[in-house]
Image (cartoon, helix red, strand yellow):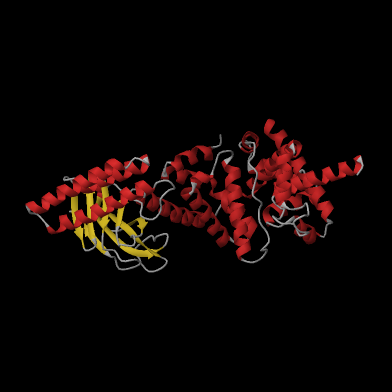
Length: 274
Length: 177
C-alpha cells in the first residue's frame, strides 16, 4: 500500500469516527464482523489513535448539540399531566424510602435486614397497642421499643435512609404520638408529621396502587397525596408529605398507577383525625 | 457546570424539589427529542416519563459532564428502544459510547441554546444538514441513510463528517463570541 492509499484509508476511518459520533453506526456491520464499519471496530480505533480521539470528541460535542434543536414548548395540558404523574410517583417513592419496601440501593443489605427487623417490630407494636392497655402489654411494648432502639442503633450503612427511618420510627413509637385506628392498621400523627402504619392491606389488582388522600380542616374535598404498595405481607408504612396540623381527614383508595386527581373507587378507609 | 449537574447532586440525596426543578427545566428537551424521533406525542410522553423516572431511580448513572448531553442520549436510547419494540428497525442500536473529555462537552453545550444550534445547522449545505438530522433523529444507520436518500454510501460518510466538522466550528465560533 502506498502513501496515497494510506491517506485514503485513514480518511475513511475518520469518516467512520464521525458516523460513530453521530450514533449511526450499527453495532455489527452488514458486511460481517471483519468489516470496518461497525461501532465496536471504530470504538477500538478511537481508543488507540489520539487523532481519532480528538476528532471524536470534537464531533460528539457537535452531535450532542443537535439535540437542543428538539426542545419545544409542550402543550400545557400534556405538560401538566406528565408533571403530575411523575411528581406523584417520585414523592411516593421518596416517602416510601423512609422504610423502603420495594427498592434498596446496592450495598445496603445490612440496612435492609435491620429495616426488616424494624418493620417486624412495628407490626408487633401495632398489635400490642391495638389490643392492650394493661401492665404486661406495656412491658411487651417497652421490650419492642428497646428492640427498635437496638435496631435503630445498627443502621449505619446508609445515613440518609437512617435519618428518615429513625425519624419515622421515633414518631410512630413516640408516647406523644396520636394514633387513629383503622381496620387495616392505624394512622399516626406526631407533631406536624403524619403516617399510615398499615398491616392488613391486600394487594391491589394488577396495574392499580393504593393512593392516600388528605382533606384539609374546614375543606370538603379530598386532595391527592402519595401512591404506595404494601409488601408481600400486606404491610405498608407511609409518610404523608403534608402538614399534619392542617389535615382533618385522611383516606386511602385503590387507583390506577400514577394516581388520580380524585378518588375513583370506594375508599379502603376514611379516617377523621380528631 | 450546567444547572442540571447541580440538581442531579441534590437528586442523588433524594431531594424531590430538585427533581421537580430538573423536570421543569428539561422536560421540553426530552419530550421534543422523543417527538422528533417517534412522531407520536403519546409515545413521546411515555419516553419522557421513562427518562425522568430513570433520573430519579438511577441518578448514579449520570457520572458528570454535561447533563444536557447525557439526558439527550438517554432519551435517544429510550426512543430507539421504542422504535425497536415496534419492529420498525430491529437492528438499530446506539453504540456503547466512549467517555468524553467532559470539559469540552460542557464548555460548548453550557453556552448554547436551541436558537444558536438551529442557526449553525442552517449554515450547512442542505445535503449535509439533512443527512445529519435524519441520522440523529431518525435513529437509522448510515447504510439506511444511503438507501433512504438514494445517496452513495461513501458520499453519506463524507457529507456527515464534513457537516459535523463545520457544525462544530460554527458552534465554537458562536460560543466564543
